[in-house]
Amino acid sequence: MSTSIEVNKQNVKALLESGKERPFIIPEYQRPYAWTVDQVQTLFDDLVEYTADHHVSDSNQNKEAYFLGCIVSFENKNHEQEIIDGQQRLTTLFLLLRAVYSKLDSSQPSKEANNFKQAIEPTIWQQNKLTGEVDFNHPLMTSRAINDEGNNIFYDILKNGRADHESNNNYSKNYLLLQELLDNYAKEQTLTFYDLIFNILNQTIMLPIEADSQDTALTIFSTLNDRGLPLSDADIFKAKIYNHVSDKKVFVEKWQELEERADYAGESIQKLFYYYMFYLRASENDRKATTPGIRKYYSKNNFYRLFADDLLDQLDQLLNIWVVVSNHQIIEGEDWSQDVDILKVLDILSSFPNEFWKYPVVVFYLKNHKKDDFKNIFLIFLHHFFAVIAAHYVITPTINAIKGNIINLNASICNDLEPKFLFKNVDTEELRTKIKNPHRNTVRMLLKLIAYKEQDNLLPEKWEIEHILPQKWQSTYFPNNSEAEVKEKVEHIGNKIPFEKKLNIIASNGYLDKKKEQYRQSKITITKDLADSSAHEWKLDEISDRDAHLSDSIIDILKKWGLNRVSDSVDFKKQPSRVDLEKIKQFKEKGWI
Image (cartoon, rainbow, N blue to C red):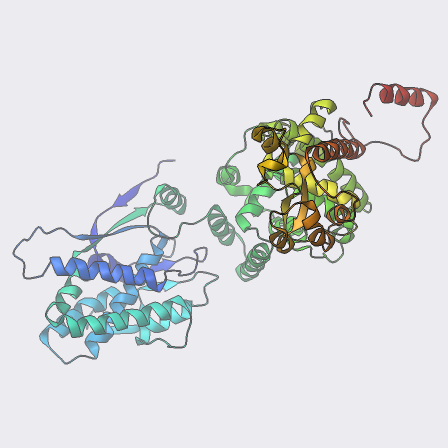
């Protein structure tokens, strides 16, 4: 189907007067009016500067105009101009002209004041077509943004020309600022005050881009880069769903609650749609390695995926994961949310160096959370999943280490009787070597894994990576070692512990004996244990010994959790057969388990 757009450069007066036939509407899915007083001040200063260089009396009839930007809209079924882009500028223009009108209305009568009042009236309000009488109750612009409590305030300002000085919304603050700026300008620049009004109406140019449909307008909008606040994909999805549902009030309430809850968890509705896309793809057994953009994915077949009855409920459900991970909140009716072992492994996963760990966790949760034994199978899955992705990333610390397998795992979770971890087996000796001197992106994750082996509760929220042997050492401390050798050893895992930030600041760059008192105050078990050890100094041999101990410990944990195992179909209640016992013996002799 072909699309069309109409572009016709217009000055502010001509553009706003078009609202008499087709009123301007800020639709429900748009964001609230968000321009701050700083942005309004900048616009006003620009107009004042333009006026200083362009007086009405100038003889140059082709003087350069002041360009304010683009407006993207389409005519909806009610013959309204629905604004897709440019809402912030357009709203501010209405406030500015209303402030000018109020100023003129309160000024001494003059031909100029009367002239400009008559010029402004058809840009803000409907008029009687026969008498020209102004209908102040019917402004040419209305905001219906669903989360904007100031919609009525905007209407009242346009109707009455007054704003509450105690109000904290952007409409009132900006309108009051514009009134103050106009008062000051009229006092200081009396001779050019009417020039300013003339330039606002006639020399300020906008470029209205009118599309033939909402989809076309959204497409145009997505390619523009302007001074406004861009719509997100989630805003566009909101528009689609809002126009589709019958009970719009219920939808608005549920969307707002979801938005607030996501913000509380440090997420966004946009990210929820992104996570949910992986679940839908997995359910459809989509194993393509390329991840589509979410707008492209959800827009397929006329956005049909957005119209599922349970969509918002599903997004709210998956948000439980992030409420627990970010806020450690207990979810009513979901006992997994207070299981300390699950919370520990989720905390470890949260330090994985990229976001790919999130997608299988979401898929597994949405697929299985209603099962009676979910808490148990969730912990088994999380252990196995972490063991696999951590080992691969430690050996190859790049996104590609796990990216290709994640999509297959997602699909397996939804379509197989049990998830298949079809990752390449890891060489444990190579892994052991890599653990001793890990990539910096993996250190926090590995320290959490080590700490939680001894820790009964969750780690404190604010902790830092502490170097037991400080990164800045005295050269006399290692007379027989090169600087490069010591510097390399300092970054080994055996020289690092998790340590509360406030205690770490006090400990500073001291040596072990001097820092033990701060270590002893730690609520992190492995750090506190170091304070109680018999060691009085910490040199390269101590780091090497701890390297070996920690790498062995990590390998043991990862194997126990499922490293190099394809699935979790192990019946622990069943006694192993003689053949099984013989295989286990052979595996042990070869160092495989």
